[in-house]
Length: 443
Image (cartoon, rainbow, N blue to C red; front, top):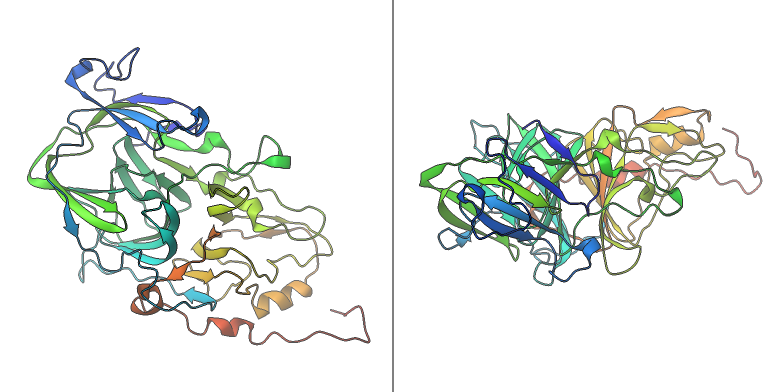
């Protein structure tokens, strides 16, 4: 559980076997006539067979029973987990949500899957192009059931409470201020230790990768060696009452029954794996002379579109750092953007909106909708003495940014009852400082 392997590059090959079965990995070939220990060989492909070697994703799993042994899938209903982007009318307004409520165990037991709610998204699962943003709130662990996503990758951002994620590749403990990516098709189950909340970014059809560094050079931002992937761990367990495998397929959920644990992989090798990353390891690069760098400089992972330089989704963070720019309005500038920007807060107080934007909540600024610092932040910034200062200490805000124009679900607009209808008022008191007779305005 506490052992992880370095994921030193997303294209590299990795291998792991449970130490209880030394030599479980076949030597010399992927699928021998008889695998060691009588295991079954099964390949999990995350890309087309004919993709270039640099982007080809696949892993070989050596398991006690193959995943094909299950009863037929049947429809599984989960309210407010959806890809119906037209269920309510579009709304271009700035939106902010108060922290999403976690049900008490005495009121309702809710695990990771039953606690998923879709907030917004765009695109189509069948054409494999799009994204969705979900919120999870749960208070109990998944028992004798697992989940996998046929539609795309899941980037999980815990905000409150640890997640012990059991995957076919091994176990991953993910704490707030860490992220975990479970890629398309990988089965996993989530154990929690009390009231738990977080965010999920789902991307269809493409995988997350490290952004290109360009003029930055070889080092900086998220370093490949800091990504960790689990070591093999298996359980050989029968479940006479039935183990439930839940699949998300074309935006809908389905469930199948089987009589054994799906986490029966004794060994594996390949480059298609789940992984985690500690946001504290991000190497921040910032301006050191003047002006405010674009938020793209804080990109941890990107899911590229077919257009060069344009992402289906970027995962961006705003970590603790030094602000040293001179003659500069240092907070985020007022802005209109051809991208959609969803922000969440893991901990602390975001420097551009210290009031109202709270951990466990979120905000959405849609395509070309103006946004920026609130009144207090603006007035404080233009009157500040510009000297080196720490920014965002004790804080971790993040952004899911997308080139797609996202729609908010009925749950996000109405049912969740967390939408802050007074959000716009944080800019209402902005006043004019314009004086045509005086070029330099005294502080």
